[in-house]
Image (cartoon, rainbow, N blue to C red; front, side):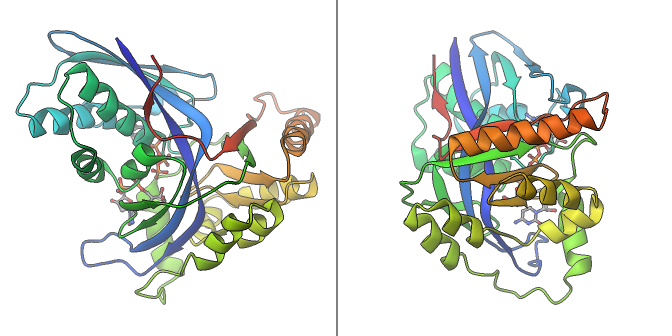
Amino acid sequence: MITVRAAAKVNLHLGVGAPREDGFHPLETVYQAVGLCDDVVAYAADGWDLQVRGSDWVDLDAVPLDRRNLVARAAEVLAAHHGLRRTGHVEVVKSIPVAGGLAGGSADAAAALVALDRLWDVQTPDEDLLALAAELGSDVPFALLGGTALGTGRGELVEPVADDGSWWWVLVPSREGGLSTPAVYRRFDELRPDAPATPPSAQALLTAVATGEPLALARALHNDLQEAALDLRPDLAALLARGEAEGALRGIVSGSGPTCAFLCSTADEARAVAGALQGRDADDGADDPVTVLVATAPVAGAHVVV
Ligand SMILES: C[C@](O)(CO)[C@H](O)COP(=O)(O)OP(=O)(O)OC[C@H]1O[C@@H](n2ccc(N)nc2=O)[C@H](O)[C@@H]1O
Ligand SMILES: Nc1ncnc2c1ncn2[C@@H]1O[C@H](COP(=O)(O)OP(=O)(O)OP(=O)(O)O)[C@@H](O)[C@H]1O
């Protein structure tokens, strides 16, 4: 049995250009792995079996168990790479909200590549694992790498960024369910027909990360998909404003949304903002309370824990 853990991400900078001929958008993005993780647990077995369970804020019904699951696809591409048959009993233990803009499925795919590489004892070189990850999805190579990294191409070309900061995030998944990533990119195309061929540079964000100062980072956060996500989910604007009013340095939509991510100056501030957002919700008399999570960053990429 082997357990591999992989983290959610936020995009500190998400610069999006006009769609390429293959339909993907060129990106200049800075990913940061945050301490909200899924585990992939793999057992040796003769056949193939996949199960998913998770935290009560995760919509498990929205996770396919067949070949559409990125864990099943990770197993297929790794097995094919080595000329093997896909085998294993695999359990995915999810804490990352589904279709939340936090790259949860990508984290699971990266964790599965690492877990099955060990289970099958095939010792895939890192370079090959990164190439297989890129086949599975644009965010998957970063989920292997973790930390803070610059992403280019369609997001699949990743290089580590030095980050000595200790950052605190409050994450608020949507109660209304997830957003489809292709739908958010389509709305971006409608709202931004004049998008440049070359995506906006991440240089200002990289300079801010290097300072280690939360306020500098807060000012430099940038997400070109935020306008599209807010257009599809107008209620998120009020949530972003509320988090900032409660003391967050800055609130942004995470990736394609709808999860909102609030950067805070310290762990105590993050806990205070989280408490205020949760408390305000209780005052509103909501019968289905909002989930508010506190996470530190950066954290490691997909790694063996047991
Ligand atoms: C929004 C982000 O999470 C930001 O990091 C990513 O760009 C999305 O990455 P992902 O979910 O791994 O995306 P993929 O599985 O590669 O692609 C899903 C769909 O998103 C759109 N897509 C994705 C990445 C990209 N650079 N341009 C796109 O237009 C395409 O419609 C694509 O069919
Ligand atoms: N292991 C998985 N966990 C969750 N969803 C999965 C998984 N495998 C496939 N999916 C499918 O992928 C869709 C997107 O899920 P995911 O949680 O990765 O979204 P996301 O966090 O918005 O992704 P990203 O930020 O990379 O665009 C889900 O709606 C689901 O149908």
